[in-house]
Image 1: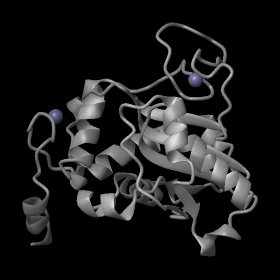
Image 2: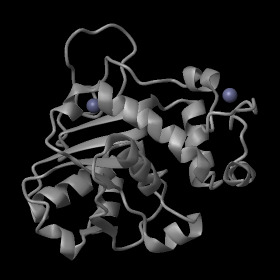
Image 3: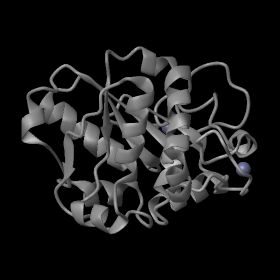
Image 4: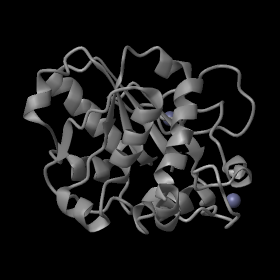
Length: 238
Ligand SMILES: [Zn+2]
Ligand SMILES: [Zn+2]
């Protein structure tokens, strides 16, 4: 009965190819296999992928001369059409049933990238949306992803950040404009502030583009709550 009800709510077909599914996921094996995974080599700092062979760590051209306040950023999928298509369905078409399948990619990355394993009991921190935007979207995709990842990995979820003010949509802004657009946009919830000192965190978001959002969150967490390390894990490297 319950399964039947679930099937009504969450259609048991693949989101991308409509093949019927029975394993409770929203993407079939073949579509999952075809998504563009982001694998080494990639920039040790911002996670930008590099097409070609490289044996050692490298820093991409974009990161040279930049200071990121996060320790490193990593994404699960390359910023190609199929990845953005899924994020779009999750974010704007409110296909929240996709969250579990998408969080599985984050979990794979978490296990496979040793830098995450080197963190000490990291807390998963979703990048917050302003409450009004969250209301309009019927939820925050970063929070949903972090919650599923927490279930899969056993790492604790910490919604310690809030978005204080609405910011202009960042899509058309460059990194410098984004940084000034984001100044003062986030705050740490009072009751969390004292508990974060010395902790390692993993910021969770759907897409990493210029890194301005991750930088601003990491800057705040380190400066105001004395957080030790801030890693960034996103679904897509835009
Ligand atoms: Zn499929
Ligand atoms: Zn880089």
